[in-house]
Image (cartoon, rainbow, N blue to C red; front, side, top):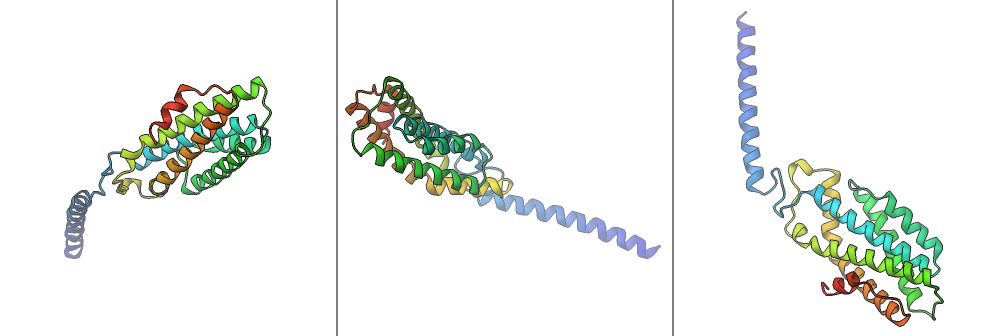
Length: 208
């Protein structure tokens, strides 16, 4: 009987100590900026969702412009990748999407810098539509600057979301730079081939 009483007291004491320790660690986590949110004002999930939205726009743009200049296979790859990318994308998914997007931009830039391309009215419209989406993607990326500056993953975001967000934070500056180069090149091509340049595209270049 006495033994049971001692065990019960010990159990209660352990629970109390665990609660105090947990509270103290929680306070420590908040003081270090790793509590329930991120010091940058956006959660890992929000950063990934915004990046995915921007990347989907860019890949739709790639698909349209690649198809417009005759690169059908590359256009299909970009289109499929845009559809497969989701808001809860893992780091591996983002890396795969980035690889396809980089290859798409490279193929497009090589095509645009080559010999004159024959385009009908439908192809020119498709290219102009691509410029709009490309501009939207760039605006989305640039607008994320505040979100990623000083970002620290919270305890609640440790895992896929945090890994994906850190991947975005690290690669965003290069993404903006490369996308800006592609957009300017596409605008120059449009002007040289009597393709109307959408206002969105011109406005986006002012952000660079």
